[in-house]
Image (cartoon, rainbow, N blue to C red; front, side, top):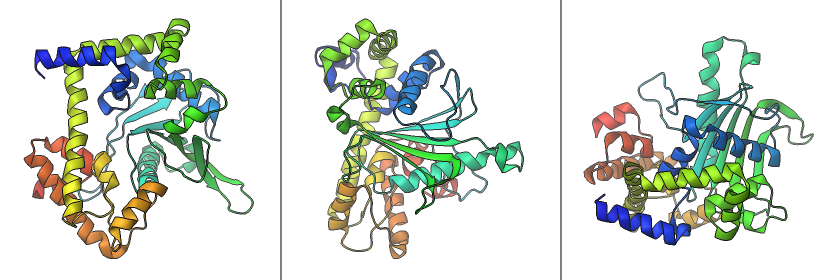
Length: 335
């Protein structure tokens, strides 16, 4: 980014702070994934669990360790992935925080994949499953995901269908829909965090910063981010990458090659639909679900590989392409 463009962006966001995307990957990780900012992440996580606490969380979080976000694989052809933020709490619970800016048709399936990789990685501690720590997946969503409910915070656990008794407390998946927080009857700590991330009420946010030490630190961290050209370069790159992916996907849709690729927009992962893809895609966006047929898997993989090639041709690094598409090392080497 040229110095003049950097100055223009700083001025724009200073005058119109609502135009700054706080769900941007680069900024979100700057705010929450740095050791210097641990108190901010601890406050956010406690706010989430105060609002709706899963069975596996025992007590408040007082400290945490920020861990490696790259998922491990045992075989070259295995699907890989990179988490947004992964932490281990003072009580040993493992938490994965994912930030999403637009719908993905198989978000729930992706969360199950992330859970399975993170949970099974604990096998190095021994074969006694009782020693495995709970894993919590948190999805912070900038969009509406569930159309069948008004609640902004949903928590899924493993329970018996009729009796609703809990099978295990070691798995829970949270979905927090930011747009629904505007209608929240009570402004609790979590709603206050969402108000900041969406910047839905600038006046209230400034009041937070004047009366709340945590939000004062948040606003100071935001200023530091905007005043650092390297950080802003990362911000712009993340915004541009999503724009390029959206355009690539639009081209694939118009030529009839892409089917059900909402995850391709978000992180380059895709599931195909065999028939009625135009209608099915809209339904998938509206309901947050899509029926994936086995017969479409071969075509889907070719579509992902095609998009990966175009991403490389557009100048994106191999590391970024693999992160967005989740192609295996062998598939990346074959491109």
